[in-house]
Amino acid sequence: MPLRYDPDKLGTHEVEIAITHCGICHSDIHLIANDWGISQYPFIPGHEIIGTVSAFGPEVRSLEVGQRVGLGWQSNSCGHCEWCMAGEENLCPDSEGTCVHRHGGYADLVRADARFVVPIPDALESENAAPLLCAGITVYNPMRIRGVNPSSRVGIVGIGGLGHLAIQFARIFGAEVTAFSTSVAKEEEARALGAHYFVNSRESKAMKDVAGSLDFILTTVNADQDWGTFVQALRPNGTLWFVGVPPSPVSVHAFPLISGLRTIGGSPVGSPARLRDMLDVAARHGVKAKTELFPMEKANEAIEKVKKGKVRYRAVLAN
Ligand code: NAP
Ligand code: ZN
Image 1 (cartoon, rainbow, N blue to C red):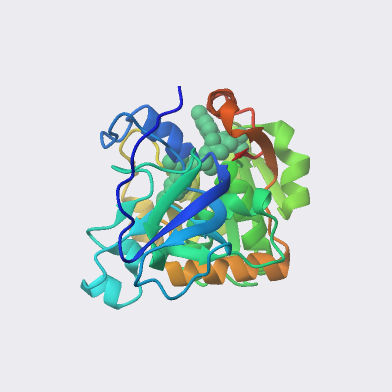
Image 2: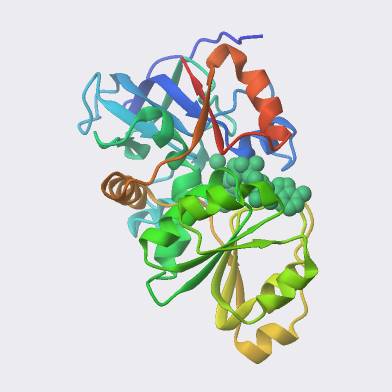
């Protein structure tokens, strides 16, 4: 059932976007089910949004009505804490999610603080750029933080919405890329996206064969795995980095961390500055999501397909 509500007066620093496209991120699925205990109902998911500016508040100077823009996971931050002042708004303790305690992008219109509304480069098409607003920045940011480069051996775990973009970014950074997947049917496409190697992560022999071979493993999986085998796959100084959210605590032995100076980390989406940088890189190097388009009215159908793991690789809703 569509929900109608009165959004009240537009804030002085706010922008209203007439939505044309919105990707379905697996975080929306977690939020619909209240997996993280933070959802409020009625709930409108959606945080991979592209549309055009339909209105803005009197203090907004950066945008024009009609301009094509994007909005990702974050829609506001306090603007004055240590992290906001350093340009790391994504780490602000008062960060506001686009669809956490406010209504998101499976809709006609959405609002956000102007600092989080970014112009979309002309070279990008809205349908396959919408997923860059969350999935893209989430995988791009850690590779920039860790300085992935041509000498890096990078593993990407889980070839879904995030993972299929991670392969593309790792490849354009010049890394040697290994895709880890539970779906052998994805091998050909993973290689076409840029993976040099493909490992079936359900095969224990294949997992043993990659022991000690990777510098940086980015996991995008939303399920529990034997994380110890991924730690074993790291070279000395290597890092296992979480962006996907498994349901259970991550349990590994300390010894492989200690003996090889290996680390475990994680990250949220990137700052607005990094988001602009990522879009520019995607535009210049041809990074795009492989998408399946659904009309907005078919959002429930699209969600069911995402839940079943049947989408290759991102469902996008269009008005
Ligand atoms: P997705 O499109 O559904 O892809 C997830 C992939 O994980 C699947 O394609 C599958 O890849 C693998 N997978 C699923 N179930 C599995 C299982 N039981 N065992 C092993 N592998 C399994 O999801 P997504 O949109 O990429 O999101 C992935 C995760 O990232 C979610 O937890 C989401 O909440 C999180 N996320 C985090 C951030 C952040 O800021 N850190 C941002 C966005 C999303 P294979 O078929 O290749 O095995
Ligand atoms: Zn997301």
